[in-house]
Structures are given as C-alpha cells and as structure tokens.
Amino acid sequence: MNKRPTIHDVAAKAGVSKSLVAQVFKSDTGVSQKRRDLVLKAAQELGYTPNAWASALRSGNNGFIGIVIADFHNPLFTEFADLARQAFADKGIFCFFATSSVFNIDGVDRIDPVPIQHLLDLKPSSLLLVGGLVDHTPFKYISEEIPVVQVLSSKGALKNAVSVRSNDDTAMRQILDHLITLGHKNIVYVGPEGERVADERKSAFVNQAKKHNIKVNIVSTGSTKHETSGLSGGLQALQSKPTAIVCFNDNVAFGVQDALARKQLKVAVTGYDNTFFSSMERISLTSIDQDKESIISQVVWLLTDHEALQKFRGKEIYIEPGLVVRNSTTKVK
Picture 1 (cartoon, rainbow, N blue to C red):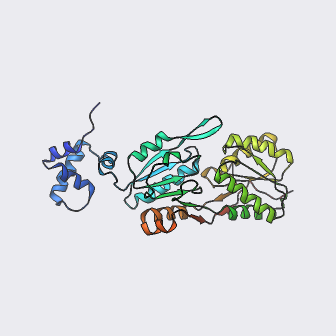
Picture 2: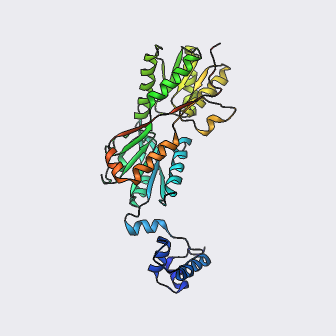
Picture 3: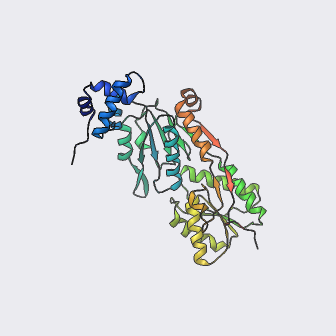
C-alpha cells in the first residue's frame, strides 16, 4: 500500500517551505501566483489533499461544525444533516459527522458515547444535533461556551442549546382539520412515548382532539417509532374500527399502511415528516412537511452569527409546518 503524500512531500517537490504549502491550502491570498501554481502542481502530481482531521487537532479549533445524527436509519434525519452540510459548505465551513448508537441496559436505552466522543475530541467550534437523543451523557463535559443547536427535537437536558423545530400544535390542527373536513370522527393516534419529542407530539394531538371535540384514542408503540412498531400499533388500533389513524411519523405510518394491507381495509392514514418515501406513488402518504429550508436557514444563521446564538441560548424556535395531502386520506364512505 502506498503511503499517503504529506505536506512535507509537497514542500520538498515544490522546493518551498511547509508553511508556504499550508498557506496555499488555507487561503486564496498571501502567496504569489507563481509560487501558488508551483505548490498546486506538485500537490496534483503527488495526489495530495489536505488532512482536515490533522488540521483540526493541530489548531485546537479550526471552525468546523460537528453534526450528530440521532438515528441513522431515519431518512428525515440524514436528509436534514446533508442539507445542513451543503448549506455550511456554501459558506466555506466544513462539517464532520457522528451517528449515535443506542443500546439497552436493564430496559433503559442508552447512547454509546464512543462515536460522539471521537467527534468531540477533534474540538469542533460548534455542534448541530439532528433528532432527539435518548440521553445527553456524552455531552456532559463539553464547555458551555460551545454553541449547540438542535433540530427536530426539544433542547432537553442541554440547557444552553437552541432548539429549532416544527410547531406540533399547528401540525396536529392541520391534520385534524383535514380529516374532519373529510368526515372522519373516529380517529386514533399511533406513536411512541417516554421520549420528550414523542410525548410533546402526542400531547399536541390530545390538545387538538379536545378542541375538535374528538374522543381521544391513543395506541402506544412503546419506545420505538419504526415500521415494525407501526405495524403492531396499527393492528391494535384497527380493533377500535377507526376511520382514520394519525401517526407519530412517516415510518410508523408505513407500518400502519402495512397493517391495513394485511387486513385488506381502507382507513385514512397520516404521517409526519414528509420523507421522500411518502411521495412514492404506491405509498402516497398525507404527511406534515417540516419546512426543511426554513429550519436549515435558522440553523446556519444561529451557528454563524454569535449575537443571534446568544440571544436564543436555552430557547426554542418554532417553524410553522405545512400539510401535504396525498391519496392516503380520503372521504368517509
């Protein structure tokens, strides 16, 4: 295996100092065009690219943003993380990713701190947490001065973090307004509990159901919020013969749709997140869109504007969502 070329190799080939090579890759100014061309030609011939990890460790804080994805299997979270990466790249800021890994000890979900600790060891200038984490112990010892923004979740135990999220009350009002207009009255909510986001979304449904004079009917999927729990929750919900089922997220809704297919029943189903799967013709799921562009815009603003971040530390910023209507919701026959 050939050794990866280093900055020393480029300097030797170009006949310049290591510091000059570093300056060429660090800035577009400060080096004459002749010497810059010499360095870039040597780098190209050697196949050299700057080692961002080494640079981060040497500098202690070189301005990169650490992005932690709460659940790599949730398509919404990975989509948001990539949108954030692109938005920061447009501003010349690069990002490193870590994915939380959850394991269960005596019935309690815990995060494996190692992947996140590896990211924190690189000393990011700021952190973006995508999705709700089951616990925040890996961040116990980070400096309170590090800017932290969370999206798609409440700030939880991180008291100085800013949370940017959709307004669940608005979302549930839009869903119930839509279903009632279609003639639905026997409506069941299917989703997880025990996690802050899950409990707050369920509470939003309960509040809106009462305002709409609808009987509150909840089916819990426990601590899980994927297709398999949606399937079991959907089968349980069907026992009350609902005309519509409101789901915690799209993944749960996909499981509920599977339950309907198995029972060969027609029941209106709504999701939450408007993931790209929901628009597929065979799924065609009515879902809540969380206005990704507006949320990412707020994130970039907060993590590039020190005064803005200080103003909103410890607070939550709500973005108004929108309902996307598809074939999964039809009129009561």
